[in-house]
Amino acid sequence: MIDDQQLDLLISDIYDYYGYDFGGYSRASFRRRIDRIYKLDGFVHFHDFLSKVKTDADYFKRLTEEITVNVTEMFRDPSFYKVLREEILPALHSKPFIRIWHAGCSTGEELYSMAILLSEAGLLHKSLMYATDLNQTVLETAKKGLFSLKLMKEYAQNYRDSGGKRDFSEYYIANYGLAKFDENLSQRMVFSQHNLVSDSSFNEFDLIICRNVMIYFDKELQDRALQLFDDSLAKLGYLALGSKETIKYTSIQKKYEQLRKEKIWKKIG
Amino acid sequence: MEENRLKIPQKVVVIGGSAGSLDVLLQVLPRLEHIGDIAIVIVLHRRNSDDNILEDLFRMKSSLQVKEIEDKTLLKPGRIHVAPADYHLLFEANHLLSLDVSEKLHYSRPSIDITFESAAETFGSKVVAILLSGANADGTAGLLSVKQNGGIVVIQSPQTADVPYMPAFALDHVPVDHVFAPIEIAAFINRLGEKP
View 1: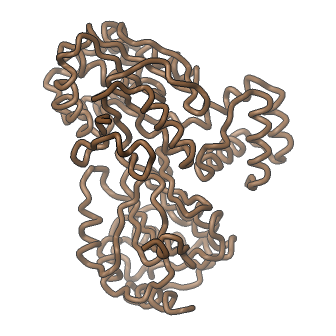
View 2 (view 1 turned 90 degrees about the vertical axis):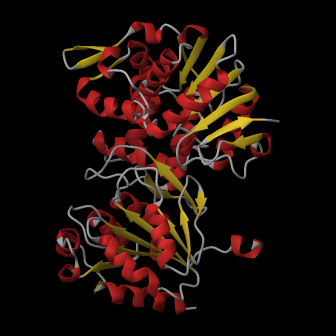
View 3 (view 1 turned 180 degrees about the vertical axis):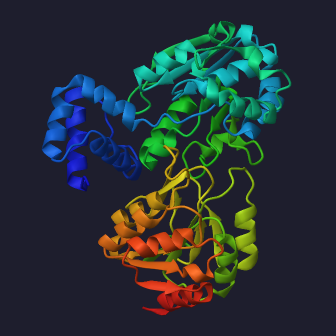
């Protein structure tokens, strides 16, 4: 078990050596991630672990990959995608150009889900999807559009539950246990590393999707990220969060109107 | 209200359950009266869906305030907090509750072990962990951690459990403080609440 003091030391050394600031991460889950990799890699003494992190840049890279949780799925929470499909995309339909930001896109499952929705709404050609993550490795994976074939049955069900009417298998080619998604879907995606802790707004968007990313932040960092999203949203643009996240009791709340009980807010102010 | 918001729980009662535990809670919750400065947290292995049937059911059966947990919900004394499906639940030192979608444990998310362990690390001897009916080994490692950090460990007596595997497994591996039937669990929590 790593104690609080050791955790503080690790956070401050990572910042000094690599410039990544994990100080605003939720302590409880950060501790679990660190404990997990510490045990997984068989460390017994904290100073060995700390020195490995400081001196071995590849190991630090592995550490950041482990810290950032990359559990995701296509059409996760189908009802959320149903609302996107039936209400949000029609509202954006008349725009000459649609900019979407997937903040913390991980390995891209939700990104390709979005591309499928845009394609079915006939909007893909005039959309641009900015996909960002802290973790460069997951971005490489996302770019390829390769997902495990054995998950496709579950994803196809999610797709249908979200109101999808087509045969889901039309969207990918099965090959050696992998599903390779149609390259037409990724044509309108731009990938870039972006850190919600330290980086700034870089464009103006009509829709920002950031689901189950801010749950790993403490309140203060959540406020920073929300401010960043607010700075990056066009008026009447939409902010979509995870099913148990909220902007209630935050400084941006008064400028937003929630879509019924959905975790989607429209910028009105 | 403002005064209440600043109050912090003197005890955190965390109840974990799986198959067969809903009936137990429906016996326990209506009997809870004097929970005072105690905060109750319920973590059940539940179907992944968007509905709030579980919370509604608890609300119907309890005179206490029932709160569905979202990310960074404040843990409040006198209230029953219910963990959502498909997220692990963790405790922060400032009494906020954090959610986490990391890997499943014992094929479960929420994992009872993860929540018990987090409670033990964060609140030490203030924790009372109660493990109910269920069909897998989830909860045992968490109870051990609660015990090691000075908390109190309670399990539902396997004889009274619809699915005895989970409490029986814990009984074999953890030095438990109390083994109770459902009605005794309610009485026990009420007694905790009466203490100053």
